[in-house]
Image 1 (cartoon, rainbow, N blue to C red):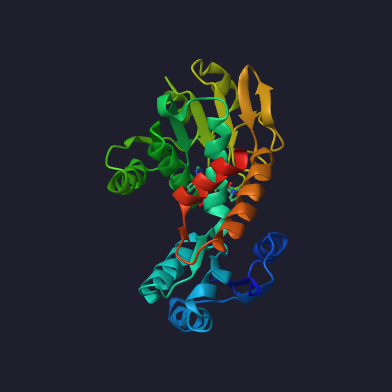
Image 2: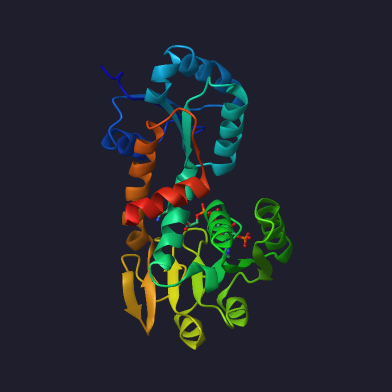
Length: 289
Ligand SMILES: NC(=O)c1ccc[n+]([C@@H]2O[C@H](COP(=O)([O-])OP(=O)(O)OC[C@H]3O[C@@H](n4cnc5c(N)ncnc54)[C@H](OP(=O)(O)O)[C@@H]3O)[C@@H](O)[C@H]2O)c1
């Protein structure tokens, strides 16, 4: 008989995310072991507990989810988890701190429903946060030309260089744009704008959006008023807004949730998977069929 599916939830926040727990249970996990307030120093012992209890033939029935609100802290936990594995002694891991990977994948897939990602120029507003960086990275990986925007040109440039380090043929450029007037100046020739700004920050006015004649699709990931792209409602899902196709944060959220659940289920298919941004995007493509 198959062993129960056990998921270890690794979370740097004092209280492990209830959201992540509910999604895990709804995805078919039999036993959820929730670890909050986790530091890098805690990881090794917990991973040993996961690796050394079941035989190699049953290791795929144990997996790790790295979540919580702090993406940088989650990345450190993930790095330590990877360091702890050796040879076949490993379990599969999904990284989705702050929903960054599933959200970025859902945003990119939403655009891909309407346009060929290989032939678009995309502007990622606030492309320096954990979600925006992943959006830019995933688009670059799909062959899009990507403009990464930030209030700081140097910060945007650092993001571009980090992505080119992973994707040497990535076509990326850094632009300084942290408000609507600045963003309007870098919209020329842009097919897609994705706003990944902090909650409650408007990055593009409705008038500036209407003036962007090349724009075809707009995605706003900020649901907190004021939204990032003025005039686009959080619930918009392929809505027509002044002749362009618009998605708001809640409109993208349905696909994000499906991808999250699919990724949890995928963990139990084999014991050697690390599901980070690119792998999550690939699973999202399967979800869309
Ligand atoms: N729909 C979903 O399921 C879902 C899931 C996760 C996140 N989200 C949303 O996705 C968005 C991005 O998340 P995140 O965690 O990556 O965001 P974040 O780290 O809080 O902020 C992203 C970027 O916003 C820019 N920013 C901050 N304050 C600003 C200001 N006053 N003016 C202009 N730009 C400013 C910063 O870029 P610079 O300093 O480089 O300018 C920052 O790097 C958020 O709105 C979040 O709520 C949605």
